[in-house]
Length: 465
Image (cartoon, rainbow, N blue to C red; front, side):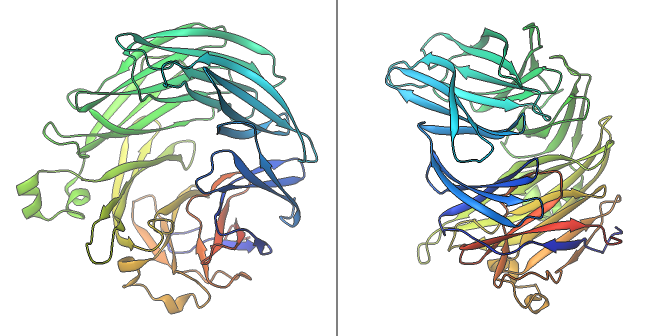
């Protein structure tokens, strides 16, 4: 694939869905593709569409699990597993549900049980290692005033044998809201990324536990700035990359970026920091605004950290805010995004801003975000052009689209070529599903009909294939 040319696509047959269902994830188990559809504003129910290896529809089944909230779904030992928490009076119970090969029934297992306290609940998180060799969980104990936060951790192998369990007494004050991310690699090494909100700033910590239960922890520090937001990714060896953005001393905006690598330890192998180049900030703020309000990006958040090859990764930041209009009501607004290319040694290659001016007052952002993938070593970004963002597009380029779907293929230099591919699919009024997470071995993107009552997959193929 060369810059300026989008991939080829093989499209599946049209499949039906309810308007309030969101196609969230696709898993691959033996000869089946499992498509998970979640119901909006529903924490316990899901619909499972079973497809064969050619993405042809086989069956569908609805489930309502005996939990208060689903926490995680994945594949272990070629079986679909779902983790959920159940608030049972004064107890918070983490459960595991293992589905049989017909995807019609499941076996339930209790994994962890912790006390609720005075109306405050346990905060659970679950991680499955990339190949499903291990799975682990943490339970951050319910808030207790003037006490340090305690986290309980346990890890199991793929046969559901417990490897270890222990408590982690942190140095952090117990809080009503806890922000923990658990990452387990295929070596049975666990990283816990913890964010503490304290006195109008974010403090980040990394706790680690190896397969024998040995614990470490360190504060994630930069030279002179505070971290505002961060994303993570594992490389093939199970090393953790943590990358994100830092703020200026006087504002909670994005002024620059950082990247750190952790090789199965709590201390960083390296940490690199870079201030934004002028081209990044000036794409979204005039020189007059910079002089008046300072140098930085406001209302941006970290969108993802994606490996495009063994040596390169992309860190994305996306703008998102809500415009208030007394006449027309609130309007979802996404001004654009920035792509930062970093190498695995922490080197900075480019920062490319993309201004999109997306507005959406009808579905409040359901269609307006972007979707990034890696294909043949290059990042490709798709976006539905909507509202003000569609004014400059040539919608006639896609006669059957509900919203014009733009494809941006980025080169190693950071330059990109934009196009509106002729997606040759059965669906009329098609739009890109930006909520979808692909967990299969193929590179696929998901499309929904504008009325949200049907979906299809596009399987990416080389332009030479």
